[in-house]
Image 1 (tube, rainbow, N blue to C red):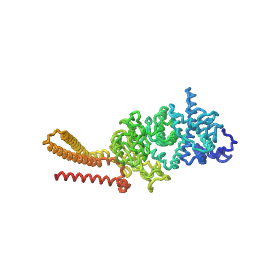
Image 2 (cartoon, one colour):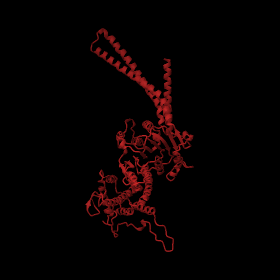
Image 3 (cartoon, rainbow, N blue to C red):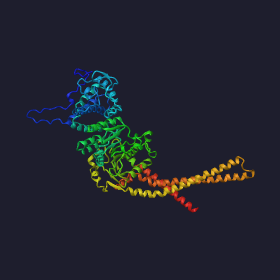
Image 4 (cartoon, one colour):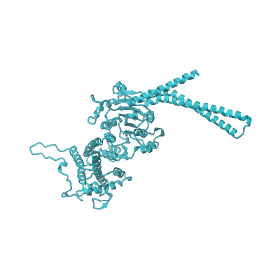
Length: 626
């Protein structure tokens, strides 16, 4: 039913919800006028206070998505009004994204708009009474109908609302929130800028409330540092395949916006600079809103798993100049996703799959090589097996120039996993890797939720970035020397393994030949082709062939075992170099106090190496004696 002041159930929006406008008394000093920050801060606080009263919402993890879709529809309507005005001035045809009576102005801004149960029905029901009095689709079913629409702006709206639900239980409280959001002017650049900061604060609070939703949020000082040192330039495309709530893309957009001077620059910024992908609908919604509030008119974010594309199908047209991301780690991907990757590099570990995707998506060439910065867990650095093979490709094909080791607690309290920042470009193979260990403030053992990392603490790192001098915090690993030494030491083992494998194949061929001869003789004996006097000699020949076959089989087995041992000996020299989890040589105490799992790994590796060497020595003595 339409709103009226006399409605007894209506929870009226009183003046306490908005900051008071204070008139200065005569002959007294006037109070400062309310600023945009104060007004919007008070408005958002009032909206959240109203939502806290609703029994359908259990916390900030429920309230922020709810507030976001309401703000999104208001933002879209304000944006549509501006586009419509421009079309009138230029004489162009205007096609609205949302038609009447589903526009914000039709049901939210209108004084006669629905409230209470009528509002709840209009928003969620498949069939509802619409604000113009007619029957038709409810708001959400109407917006979901945009899925797959050829109009990209409609398709974005369809993606946002395809899984959206109205979680508020009280239609009058919902009306109060809608009225408050109607007071935001998204056609004001000042208000959008202010609201962008407020929204980032709410995202942090949502992360805090969710507890296990660390994936929503990379600490902003870390994001800002990575964008600063990778330094995207206007005209380049910045890609985040795991966009989340849009932190990296927002920071990249602001970095590029500072470079835009002309109308053409701004067109490039808006339409050819920022792209992303996000698999989760909630994160997609939050990321879209975050980018919109920071000035990107039509965010080009795909709602899908970025790992779904087959790696072999990614070509030059799909590659980008800059990739900045914090891919999910610790998760597992299904077999159908793993099948998109080379057979020898398939893994369920999400972080390793994203690393391969990033390598494939980065532009080639010496003139303007693609650049990447990503957050990785320590496990990616020291990982063996498939992880080592992926890192072999990374170091052979890309210039991994810097690894920043972040202090304990950087991502607290959401994970205690040691994290690192890895930076590389496509200018050629790696020649040297610089490590920089970001120190904790003096007197601190770790960062915490209440004492978090601050951007200013990266000042020494930023000053070091272009000088690259060794210090207590920074050290260099000459990768070319490490690789060549390991290759030289491993190659004799591998060559000997290949020789042993060749010998094994020779003996295998001999086994087949002898078995064939035996079979021919046995058939002849069974077929009566030998005279009685010749049969004993033929049987003896079969026995001799059987003995020679058994000796050849044993020789084949020994050679294959030897080949395996020699291959392992070479591998133990070569593959450990792809453990990039290097400790700071200026801090020997860290070298002596490795985590238990790393100590066990080192012990097992050393035991295998010793056992292999002892076996080789024993074989050498045995050969001398014979």
